[in-house]
Image (cartoon, rainbow over all chains, first blue to last red; front, side, top):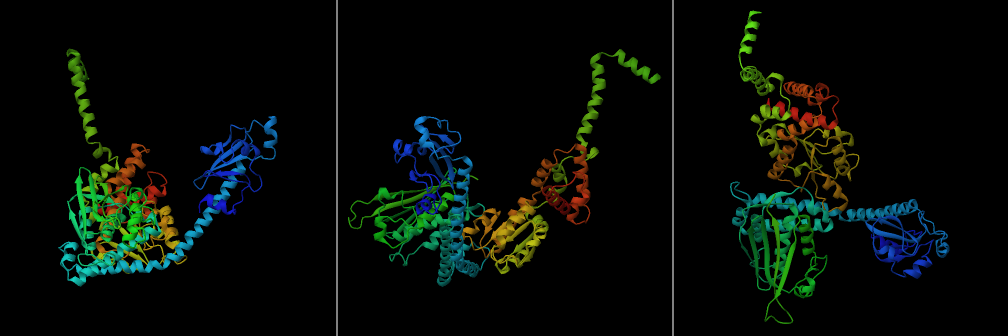
Amino acid sequence: MQLDEALQSGAIHLPWPISVSGEIFDGHIMHLSSICQKKCGGASACASAFADKGEEVCIHGMSYFQIKVKECAVTILGVRGSNNPNTSKPHLKDALKGRSVNSKQVLDWACKTESLLAAVENEFLRRQSELLDPLHDPIRLGRQIESIANRLVSIDSSRPLDEQIERAPPDLKSLVKAAGLLSDSFDFLTIYFNPAAASFGRKTYISIHGLLIKLVSILSNPDSSEENSNPVRIYLSGSCYRQISVYESFKLVPFALISNAVKYSADGKVRVNLIDRAGVVEVSVESVGPPIEPEELGLIFNKRFRGKWAKKSAPGSGVGLYLAQIVADANSFTIRVSSNKQKGSSKDKPLATNRFSFEISTAA
Amino acid sequence: MTVITEAQSTFESLGWLANFFGIGTPIFGICFFLYKYRAAIFGISTFVKQSNDLILPKWHDSDSIRKIAEIAIVDDNPNDFPTTELRKAGYRVKIYKQVNLNDIERLAEYDVVFLDIHGIVKDDIEEGGLKLLPKLRDANPRQKICAVSSKAFDPTATTFFKQADDVQKKPVNAQKCQNVIDALALEKLNPTALAKHLDTEVNHLSTYKRRTLLGQVKKFAATTKPFSEVATQITAAGKLSPALNYLLMDYTRVLRHAT
């Protein structure tokens, strides 16, 4: 819970007037001073620049305190601090009368408020933890199914697993793919509920080329798909024989970008390109689908945001790219996006070439 | 007397340069000899030198780790771990389905601990692992802990996962488990890293005390005494801090394995 939200509820005891995020909250005991109202009105000069300086005197002669409460900048304004030199000035004498506040009182209030907000936050997390607890066993069982499926397909220990999956009978191949998708979906779910999970563990070296081959194999859908009834083929080009150091969560980024492209593909083709440059590997996923408007480019990574054309094209919840962004942040790279509208497509159902790409360092 | 007089007259008859070389060369020779063979004459003065001479010639990362490293799996569902495969491969693995918070001293002696969060502590079934991890860290900061739980989705468990050296999902397959053990145990028991760390820790001691310490360590490693006796048997560094004690225990284990 944010401090300003808590203050708006009126549940937090507020002895003095304060300014938080540009909004002034009047004190329950000491009200906004006449000098503040007259000179600054709704926009207090003292709160405009936050420097966490403790006690200061404003240009109009009133004291103010600046303090951080749960990372939120708070200015206690229009009071009389112990260092105010204007107490004997006739025009301020009355305005300062009965408005004494000292640093100890301010710290005490900030401390109590922080404790209250922390208690609310902890209670929220505790309840969330309780609600999510039933997920524990399905996740474990999902991984067990994946592990068993991989074991069933690994008959020849001398051959790589990917090769053995490709050569497996259709039913077994489907089982391995479904188990892999289930496991990846649980990984998504894990990061959705706890974004910190994106950077759990330690970074390990992986072959990005190998990972993309596996994902293309899992997500390729030449026959049909539940989300996109048209058959979709994924073309992987380029190669990279170097390894990259990433958290285990990394695989979710190409997974999210490719599955997104498969979902919205209008022509049944998704192109995944891998370029190995000096010290950097670039991965791009390109497909033809609903356009992303220029003003939406910065918003599509927000939680539950969906572009206006994407909404019309396929059902979805708007979390895939949000989660990809969390994982990209954890692994210290940025996902870039471009959308070029195709000329000649219909106005009711316009199409664009959408390209998502990211660069990741191959250095240690 | 005649010899001295003869030597005196010989030196007096020579020029100053000849005298300089005549006296300087043997002195320089003796100093060079002492410097070159100082380790053999006075004893080795650094752990790095001792490690290079005695441990590294017989050290083979993965094989040595299997023989030395002690691994504990603390999980109410040990079937999620490839215990049979690990033991077959030569790893020394002990399983604990449940522990008490009083068992910390015993658990802190393991090199690598796979720790679950839920259902492993008798006194606290719900969040025992969460409380156990920081206690193990305090007891032995050198120990490597791998958090294994399917509860990564739980935001209240974030501290548990962040405090661990590594995080793995269950069930853990044999290859993955071996890779984790090798990486973590090698970080803890790498002879060169241990020796460098020890040299830094005892840098404040006099050369004589350092040599005595190295001698005591070598002597202790040659015995079959339990490593818990390191603190009482190795006295040259004075009373050992818990961190130095664990460091010396690890080093003597590696040295005993090599010798």
